[in-house]
Length: 198
Image 1 (cartoon, rainbow, N blue to C red):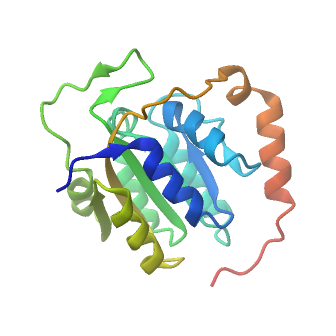
Image 2: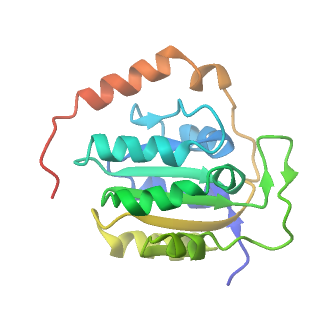
């Protein structure tokens, strides 16, 4: 496996592949995504650590006609590993769960995770019953996979081995916790006509 690239390299690939998905993102990844790809369909009102996958699953089940991307962190996912079993059981074809793994609780003063080696989240996902589980450490391979994958082939878990982004991005906690952010997302989602999923 190649040396990991910066998280924002992966986010820029995802931005180029973005076609209107609902994006549920958390913490440091959230702030970077908001800067790289601002959009009213960015769902930022996640709250407690570990809940990104649960919120994403609810949106995927509630709007099966819309693709949902979850941008999670390794520390965040570790707080709710049971979500992988729930995701497998619900089996939403329209959800892709990206885990940005850098070995730390970056939003909490970059405290290291209590492990010395990378965690095999793709292996955990497969053991939980999710057939599509990938691991990438370079953005070009992720880009290739996204181009070949198409849509409505979930659920999928994508373990991204990343380094912290080299540049600091604005962190507006007041925005992501605001009623205005929730209202903007709600309005944008309601404006999309409900269609029968393919």
